[in-house]
Image (cartoon, rainbow, N blue to C red; front, side, top):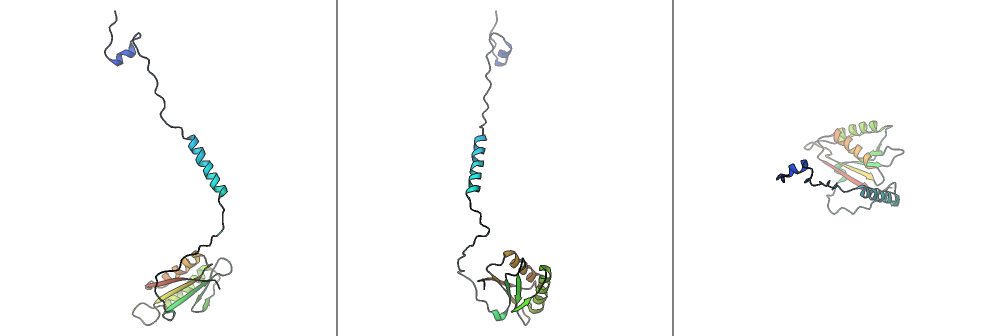
Length: 164
């Protein structure tokens, strides 16, 4: 006569009394439909969106700011030039150059000559005016040339002008 085993592990070895073990179902969720929906939404927004080459943004007028005396500062005017390079004028004299590097060197020389450290007689501030349609990269390139030329410049003003 067979005795009933008391341990569940022993049940697996017993032929008559063994309980059938059910396999557990995989509890992971199938995310394939979610991925499909995501790609369909992505395709919809790509097709439905309107691609513009350059969008014009109307910025609000500045509510704060200081008045700048143009007579006490060196004025750099950046206008849209022919091709990729902007045209630069310093105190109404155009800085002619055939390459951006040459233009930067000329700007650095003029700044080093005219802008003096605080305490010395001369101009201490630089005012950069850029036309509305000049690329930000060009303005940034000129700003870097100014800062390389005169590290003692404490005030650098940047303004946007309407295209003439």
